[in-house]
Picture 1: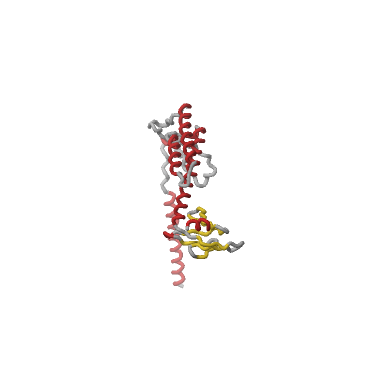
Picture 2: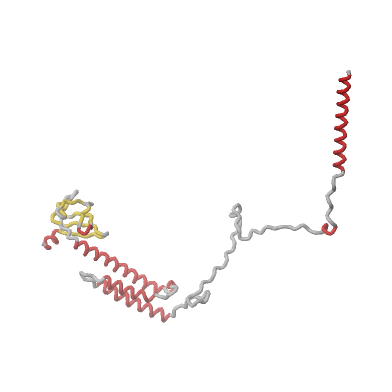
Amino acid sequence: MRRAIRSADAGVRFACACLCALLAASSWAGQAPVAEQPAAADAGKKAEVFEFVPGNRRDPFTVRLRPNLPKEPEEQKPGKSGTPGRTEKELEPTQVLEKKAKAEDAYAAAEKTFMALGPEGRPLEVVATCDRGLEVFTGIGNLGKYPELLEVREKLLDLRRAADRLQQRLAAERKFHDMGIRLTGIVSREKHSQAIVNSKPVSKGQVVAASDNNEVVVDEIRPDQVIFIFQGYRMKLSLSDMQSAR
């Protein structure tokens, strides 16, 4: 009986302690400090607004939606005289006619030499004459303004290229003949023709070793001659030429 009374008394004391703690907490919360109100001077002040201006920066998510930005003006480069933006002086009509006449004279002289080429050939002289004619156009800034000069210049360039190719061809022919390739016989058939070159039978497409570590390719075998490929050019040897050389 006494034990039950002590247990009930302990329970009452625990309940009272919890009630006191709850009352103390509520009273402390009611006395919490109140935030200070802004001063009357700051009450009428407007809040600052920050605005983001992208400028020339590119947004990777809206790059297709943004309009094209205006291009900045290019910086003018100084002309030959050093003055920014100054263009070259245009030729006078008399100057155009004078330059055209000089270029045409050079072309006529080069063409005459090219057409009068003998067995030895003078392509280097043709190239030199064309170069002298092309010097007439040196110093002309915008040659496209003068179509009459462009026409003569293109003719000189074409003739120069032809003479240069002829010079390369003549050099290859001299080297081919200096190799001493000997053609001593031909067996001509409709198919699988053969020739005797340097004492060996060869067929079309076969590589023939020559002197100075040079090589030629058999391109075609005809009844009286053989066509070789050397340095990109077709060279021929005939039986009649080889017999007369003996």
